[in-house]
Image 1 (cartoon, one colour):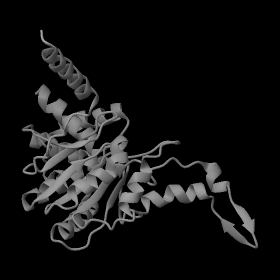
Image 2 (cartoon, helix red, strand yellow):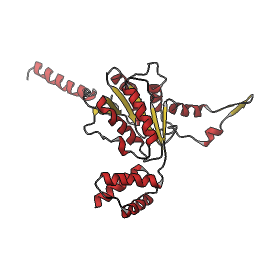
Image 3 (tube, one colour):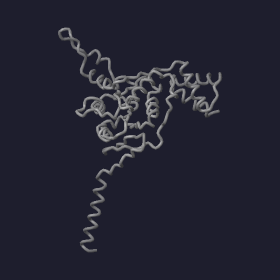
Image 4 (tube, one colour):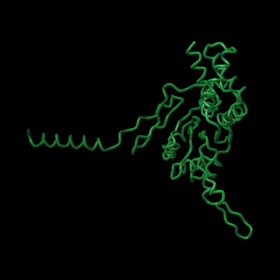
Length: 283
């Protein structure tokens, strides 16, 4: 082998090593899709991935949340129409339809060009990159953060605070943030924080820690609260799903539905859906 061939071979080996170190090129988003996930490999820059089989839910399927449904549909309709609208925080009891309502609301307006991007809590640190990527697009986007709450010591919520309200950049008119959480203020609150006050000249000042925690949830303009189902609400939801799946509702079905929720220790739309799948599947 000549010296020239040896040089070429060594250059090829060097290029292979460099390519292994460099981050792989990110695929361009397929903007024809209507639902996306933000994928962020460890130590690498994230990218938008199209959801090939998005979970499409009919708004009429949601029971016992009529007030919340009307509020979020009205807000989303304003947004899609190009009018002013608020970021939305949905909080409350588990399994009562918070995440499902967001997906159903998106599905209601998807044929009008509304798109949704699901972002995991751990990827919020890259929220500025997501906003930069879609803010110049002609479409409307909902950035959806599901089951969002933060523990002591986590700092990713600060990126969300800046994106919602507080960054030097003006909020983009084609982006709204919808988030769900079991915590009203998203961060854990302790009794000692409410007791940690000082009194100067008759003025009571809450601690800065409490202010920091409350300030995040206050950046959502619309709060929607969800509550545990009553027994009648639970049975109505269970009956809807049993009949939706092709089953028949009767006295025996109602008895089985009550046994089901008592074994789970809760009443909610999620429990009703799980009962219906089991009941109709067995029959």
